[in-house]
Image (cartoon, rainbow, N blue to C red; front, side):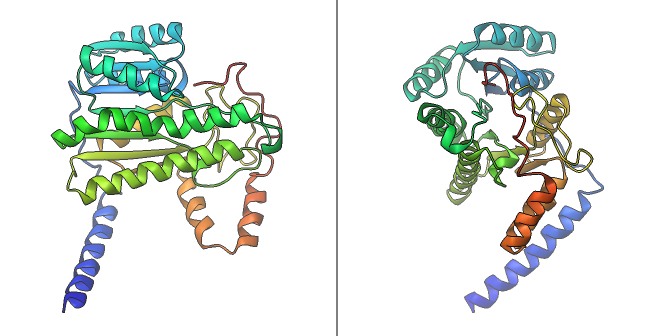
Length: 306
């Protein structure tokens, strides 16, 4: 009897969820109010981090900025204040260092308060073939792009759990869903970031903490300088993304509690095809889309931290 009842429940709810998703194709989801929320953004000194700070500021939030670039953070803080942030605080923090993350997190909690929206954005890329990448750079990539998420969650999630309120935002990558030739360590770090965010999200749901939302962002290459030199084979299908467009889409995903944000929209189809196509056909598709040659002319920034 339990089997029949649970199966019926799954079928009925599945039908409703599909109807609901169809409705939202035409009727936008209601946006939540984040005025006064304490928002921490890592890697806020430039690129997407800076643009997200500006977007969150326009909603009257309190911003906490982390980066290893003091001057970059000062400029971001200035822009955030101009855009309406109620308060802006910034801290030097090397997210690859667990002890430093914990130390600065304690300082934030003392001086600002409990973070309610955590945006793990800091990221680096080596841009080297696996066998050419120095061990130190591989370790740094994993530490910044994935392990830092563990430590920031450990630092700020307890208060969210106590209040059953908060939002965890992971700025991952399409390279965290589909592997790319020449990005072995980067893909590994972003796959880890995606898996970690998904798993913690499930833990929260399983323990009844449904007031804490999770948003996982997986964009294609963004024109911030981090992937300078990379070229897309079919720009209409897979365009190099405009940073301001991405920042606005991320904010909208947070406001509507969107769990997965893939950019551009073609990434939803490509990601789905990866899981259902035969391996040889998947490789053929990857070659067609240019995944084997995306990094051929990679230059990146002289300083590859964002």
